Amino acid sequence: MDKVYASVDDAVADIPDGASIAIGGFFTAGTPVQLIRALAKQGAKNLTVICQQMGPGNEDITKLVLQGQIKKAISNYPFYRSATRGANAPFEKAVCAEKVELEVYPMGTFIEKLRAGGAGLAAFYTPTGVGTVVEWGKEKKSFNGRDYLLELALKPDYAFIYAWKGDHLGNLICRKTARNYNPEMAAAAKVTIASVEELVEPGELDPDKVHIPGIYVQRVVKVDKQNYIPGID
Amino acid sequence: MVEKTKKKLEGLSRELMALRIANELEDGTYVNLGIGIPTLVSNWITGRDIVLQSEIGMLNTGPLAGPDEVDQDLINASGQPVTELPGACYFSDCESFAMIRGGYMDVAVLGALQVSEKGDLAGWSNPERGFPEHIGNIGGSMDLAVGAKKVIVAMMHTTPDGELKIVKKCSYPITALGVVKLIVTDLAVIEVTSEGLLLKEVAPGLRVEDVQSVTGPKLIISPDLKEIQL
Image (cartoon, rainbow over all chains, first blue to last red):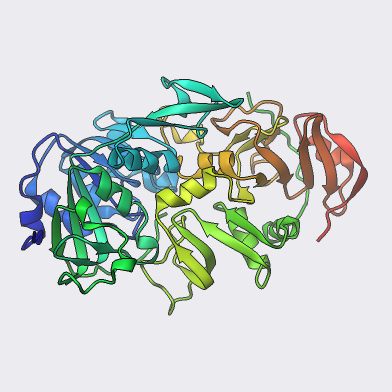
């Protein structure tokens, strides 16, 4: 059961037009930039991208926007914090011109939708967003005197994941805050592609330290560690 | 409709507001600090028995990293490189929000654009940015506001243009309803009670009338009213 692909290009080659793709990473930490770049080269269009940020700390996503590959984004913190920087950002311009559709969720709801998708649940009730624009169009129900909103699970076609170490079976270990959204996205997607800094043989990872069990991962590809300059404004 | 004032009152600096909030935090608590003035609170709790949570997925977050300490795999929820304190641990963002909604955060200190007399919080979206009403950077704000046992708002009492920020009813998009327990501004410390807003402390040199003149709702004056304790 060797899941290793020779290159990021091979790993993303079959992604069709119209696919939905969850992309891990919290600003610069744990973002699978090499897979995003490979997708830009591969050129699939009409994509739905599920990702925290659509520009800040993630300039490679911007390339997908500029190439017109994204039809819709599902996000929780899509824009630059700075209004002046945002006004010139391709994603922000595309949303305001209605060229890209955007759904925004509270951060906890965003990732719980993916957790539910990977855990065989159709939906869940959360207290977050009651009395705000987030409740528009959603079922509201009271339990023990408190209001909750019904949020639906997300089950993307693909997930792009970043991990520190991985083995040929797809068992993955993340590092520090680079873990963030990666585990739940890996479980939610039908096809999960994991980019790993270090690729090892089965048996070389401490089984007690695995963060993402290999059953959730269909493809593994070795990448070089990227050096970012953190900062998102 | 936003109420405005032309009055310019001198109050506490942002650093001293942060100190006042640090004094409010009890030892043995788990605390999440939002972006802006709340982040400054971390400068005043060194050595205290307080564990800072970062919603990216970390407990015992340390100070901002110096130039030689930057690790790109270790950032806070604002994207800034940080350090870890002894006893730190990491977890996924999903688990981080499970603990936030699950009621394990003793305190969340958040910034705000407006707070109402009922403790409604508006802070996630500034309409001046010009987005359609239902989109913007929500981030972790709504989950923290709903999930924390106690929400303390840290903000300037008015905007630089003199807009009142403590209002009868929020006109900016709501983050959560009825969640704010305490408001700490440059001018005053105000508790949100079921009867209304209770003025507990005023900045040095200010009178009750000064604070009332830049506050929308009528303030209830605490019998123990005092100068802000630092």
